[in-house]
Amino acid sequence: MYAVNLEDYGHLVDNSLHPLEKLHPDLWQVAMNREDWEARYLHPKYYHALDLKTLNDLPCPDVYWFPLFSERFCNELIETVEDFGEWSGGKNTDERISGGYENVPTVDIHMTQVGMQQEFLWILKEYVKPLAEKVYLGYTSDARADLIFVVRYRPTEQSFLRPHHDSSTYTINVGLNRPGIDYEGGGARFIRWVLVSSGGCSFHQVGARFIRWVLASSGGCSLHQVGARFIRYNCSVVDTRMGWALMHPGRLTHYHEGLQTTNGTRYILVAFIDN
Image (cartoon, rainbow, N blue to C red; front, side, top):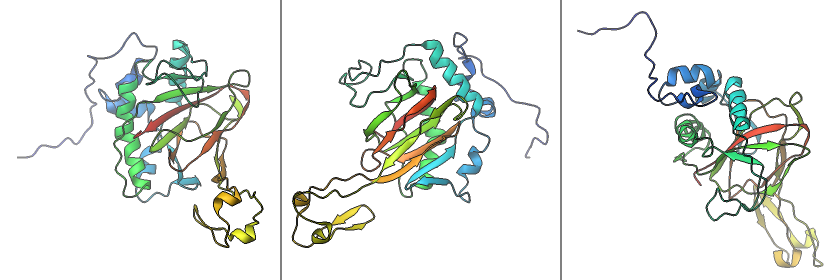
């Protein structure tokens, strides 16, 4: 004998670990009460983006754009970190991380500081990992991350971020508020490889030829003689969408910078994944 439910009369909710002391306790319920959490906080287009038949936005080479979080999630996360209020000073010295030194510092709050690290690791495993494995074929993500944090950009505080590589295999960068309304400017620029000549050798003599990112030299001049300087893509993503995640490779390829926020306050959520 088999019994099936033909009508949905609701579902059980587990409130045993509901953190009532938090400003927005429901944010913490992603594992305990997944159905309600998804209804509140997952982007309504998430599962469409995950569908193998859906072609995901590709604003730059190997950079994908996915709908991940709802506007409510974004607003409540901003309110959570601002309520906590202990923003870093954007200095290289940072006692929150191993070694105490941040090479490319931002004004930020780590999820460990607000007690959401484990919830975000669950989000990475359940929602981000499947997206990464869809678009980066053949890669199996561990969905581990030591650094998950909210960054704040302001013209009067820190307005941009210098070119850098992320300490990750891949990174997600989620816009948390509205471009053109809450702030102006901002975005990410993935910097193109170019060859700058010096040392008396012309490009014609070098015979430089590019195959995707590979530079092959001929003509008797070495790259040392040429004084080659490489910057990669020259592709920018601006007007980032609220609740949408930019996903891009990290330490090996996608050298990038944070473009200047010229007005207002811009918030982003960043996770360095499989670091």
